[in-house]
Length: 139
Image (cartoon, rainbow, N blue to C red; front, top):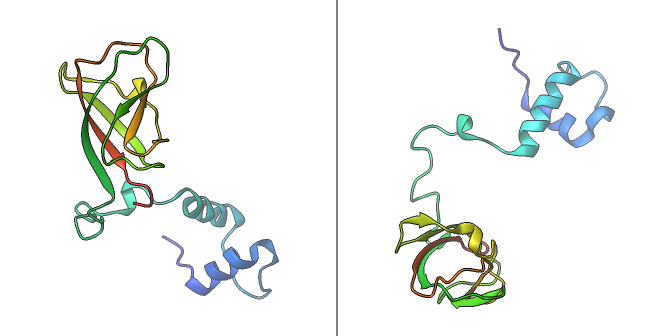
């Protein structure tokens, strides 16, 4: 049987920790530690029902999906033009459209120069087209 804890009790513990108000019934510290760990690490798929996140929950500008051409790199890094990228955007993935392969590791993981991505792999990608998914800064 699950133990139900009133919200005010959890609120008191989260605000006051071990110095909680005397006289309030609380479950064992291990149970409270488990609750705090879940709150600190965030919710996971088990907390969100199938279909629980949709277009209404995600802003249309949360992601950027762009296409660019690689560079012929003899020493790194080398800038590739990535029109629309903003400083601070996070690179989720880079797909080589020409060869249908993933090349995420050949590029910087966070955009450092607006409208560019730094190619860090010493490879000739000058004839390759890439598709990139970015998490927009602040998105």
